Image (tube, rainbow, N blue to C red):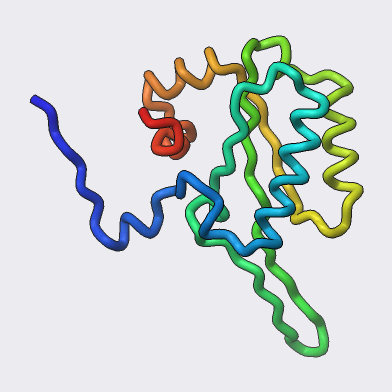
Length: 141
């Protein structure tokens, strides 16, 4: 029996978007820069997936002052780089260069990068691993 899931309006707001159109232009430009850097160093890139609060449209940029001290909480970009093979996803000096270029640009939102092969991702999607279920709507699964 095929069941169809119809999310409530509240659930729809929490589902990750499949485009970047919901983000401010400045954030879209930052992500374009990150994408360019990744593709420059990792030729075996199959997909670049934004997930987490920015993908869901729930990011936070909060600043407040308490007792003369300024506190900030700013969401980071969570990006999964999916590679064509496991070797490309494993640590190598190219990942350090990517990290240096992103972290070295003060106008780029703090970014968390993870990398997995397409085979690893598909296996975990198939097995419904909790973390990977969040990216499923972006992949059409």
